Image (cartoon, rainbow, N blue to C red; front, side, top):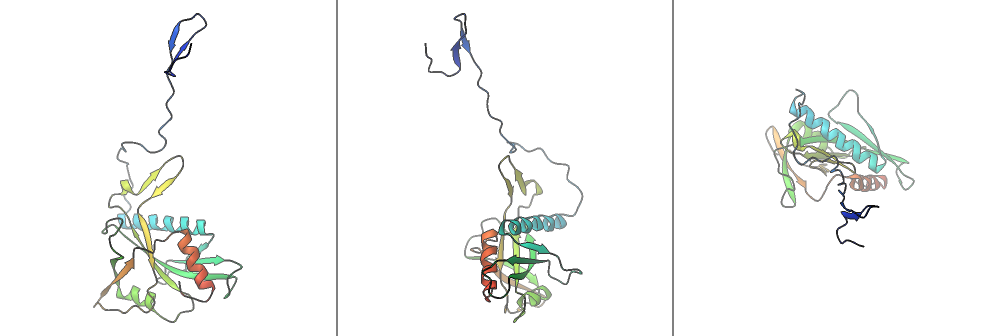
Amino acid sequence: MQFSDPRMGIDCSGRLLVMAIAQPERGGLLPERTPAARGTLATTACMETLQVGYLHAVAAAAGCSLSQPFPDNGIDWHVSHSAPGHLVDDEVTIKVQLKATSQIAPHPRGRSFSFTLDNAHLEKLARTPVTVHKILVVMILPRSQDDWLRAGHDRLDLRHCCYWVNLAGHPVTGRRRTTVRIPTSRIFDDRALCEIMTRVGRGGRP
């Protein structure tokens, strides 16, 4: 005898049995997350650490190496990329300045969003011509640390997103700080980094 309900069957004595079907585990994502006992490190420091993790993940996926200038001279990271197609050298390097904000909503509308830099930082990023190109990478992240990270069996979600821009030649317009525009089309991921390095490796700009 066959049953349309897969939970039913017959044992060896002919009795009808109802069998419980094992349900798969939900995985690492919990429907309701209990508040975590987070450390007392300043939120701004945590934001910087999160963005460094983002940069490391992108560099790893792009096959790039990372180094930090010591002592820090106003540039956070050097990113290097080796490839046989480079014309300038077998390895090219760019300088990366990291910034993070929770004051901008995710998925910014329009072609760009505003971000304000101290004039001293902008002057360093805007200098031209240069031997080693520089880019600014701005990360938009949630206000609450509870929303920064989600882990599952098949992935790690790090929110929200980094965007990059080359500010070479950008004028300083403010008295102490200057607002620049960050294109929303320039999402900073491994493919974007590889494309940046390919252009630099051919003698061009990021």
